[in-house]
Length: 376
Image (cartoon, rainbow, N blue to C red):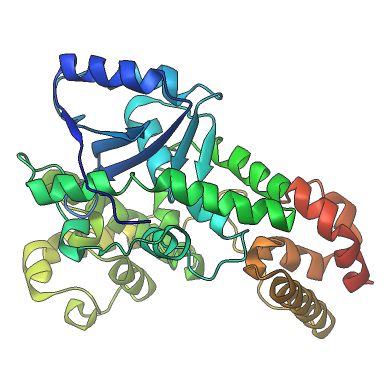
């Protein structure tokens, strides 16, 4: 297939949106993508919605005074397929900003992982399955999509992200059907439809900082104060949190509160100059507070294994790797690692484990017997 010419309809007023919705509402499937400004602002927001319907591409500007809710009927209609690539990010953003709960979702990234393919990036899938070679401009990928006006190059880039979604989806589905995995993929898409954006709980959001599981109660108290400082500063400056204080710096300070800030990796001179005193106050407050306990369900999994448990986990991992090679699939798709870890500790609880929401129906059907045999 030859590379398609990128053409689109720019939608930035109510009249244009009504015309787009009319065209979209008659389609039985849509290709959808979004662009956000998470690299440049905090909190992030959806800055573009791209939709292809019957080969017409609409690039919609949600930052203007238009009612994006007019897309709800098509987005939440299970009879209209919505094709994404890497749907998780888009679904969370659409739910966060407008409360959409999409039905009829198909994610080409997820589908490709069940199709015996080796590359899962969108440009790679287009090249491998459809034909055209699409060059991805890194500068445009990292654009501040909240800026107006957008350049023509940026708009063409955004439009190009949806024009091949239907072709890629069909090529993936053909392979999945031949492999007899249609039911597997269908269940994964059902799970994607349940994705919702969860607004951070200020009382526990600090536990989401990478590396927090290593901290003791005193370290958690310090981390909470540092997290609150960073959150306030990021909102005040409208800057992503990683640019205010990197996560690794938060953990380093919480681990060793007496550390010289000049020795903290990732904490540059400008940050120390601008926020050094505030960081010192946050550390002092954390040390003066009572040590914190992790809420139920947030306690790290016990990492120290007995010799017997370690051997059992090794066998489970070996089974999963071998099965993945046989099926030409990422082994992590076949059975969740957290489940394998739990089973390595308590193999007698397999029947309970099979009821876990982490375990898919297709996984139980295909691999329960193999897991039982491995544990035996």
